[in-house]
Length: 244
Ligand code: NAD
Image 1 (cartoon, protein in one colour):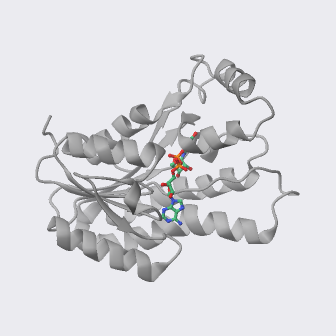
Image 2 (image 1 turned 45 degrees about the horizontal axis):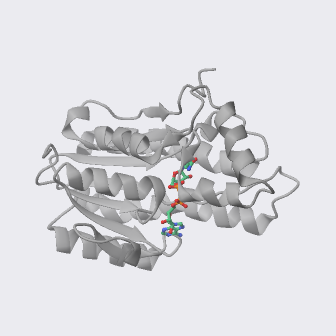
């Protein structure tokens, strides 16, 4: 398929999980794709891997400029890099709050700030943020993570309002629990990973986790010209979790 032919995309956190699935799906639709990640060597052609730490403004600016130069401009920005935290407000020290908010929220601010001058020159500019059902659902033992994703949702709506008249659309996806290396690491840390996985599947309305490819498909839609009138929305890809 070539629905995104001629479009140029940057995906942060694109070396693993949802980001990697998204980068591959965008490329499969014909887009030229740069992955900005701490681990850029994890991606291979046709993806262009560039090292960037979204907590470091200079590193983000340099990588976005390099991506725009190598790809000949930018049309699509997928702000996907994110980290988690387990615990209640009594468990996470201030330093951890600063760290997670720095990656999950300020990371989006830095990358978008660097990309906007390029996006404004595109006839099909779109930003898609990877948010979470945690933005609106009170997940137990995830106070910090939920707060960070609540901020991502608010930021998405505010950016959509700020940039709509410049022709830059901004949306987010809200995945439920998705089967990625991140979730694999959490399961591996359990006493009995297989039993934990079975219990996790059983808690899902569909009896299984969401796949990274399913989240990627939603991101590709929101990033594509097919969604030309869609801005300021959150698309849940959660197997029915939020509605139940
Ligand atoms: P993952 O750990 O598999 O991949 C995350 C990627 O982000 C990695 O490649 C990592 O190197 C990169 N990254 C982390 N910190 C970075 C930084 N400072 N600078 C640049 N890159 C950085 O995780 P995933 O499960 O694919 O999650 C991707 C996104 O999806 C995150 O924003 C996460 O919050 C969100 N999400 C995941 C789930 C889930 O269940 N997996 C559910 C809802 C939302």
